[in-house]
Image 1 (cartoon, helix red, strand yellow):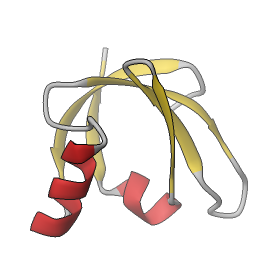
Image 2 (tube, helix red, strand yellow):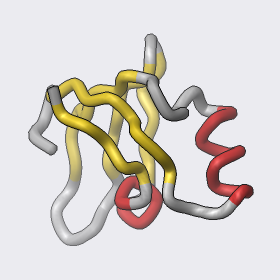
Image 3 (spheres, helix red, strand yellow):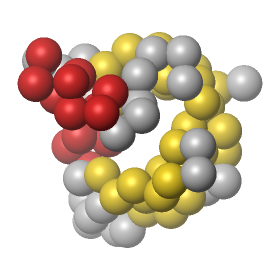
Image 4 (cartoon, rainbow, N blue to C red):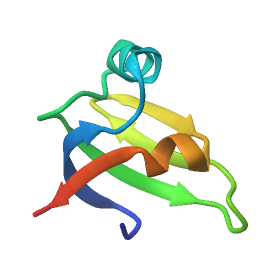
Length: 69
């Protein structure tokens, strides 16, 4: 994804614990999120979900399957 690109979450390809954690942060299938920025060398990825800005680890962010518009 590019920075400031809006996408729709299709699925979260992790276990139940990761899916529950993402849902508690507002990331679930069907929800629109916006990638704000990322850091080189597998650093955190910041995303906007509604009015919140979240920093996700690179490994966690890679498990969020999205659809670009």
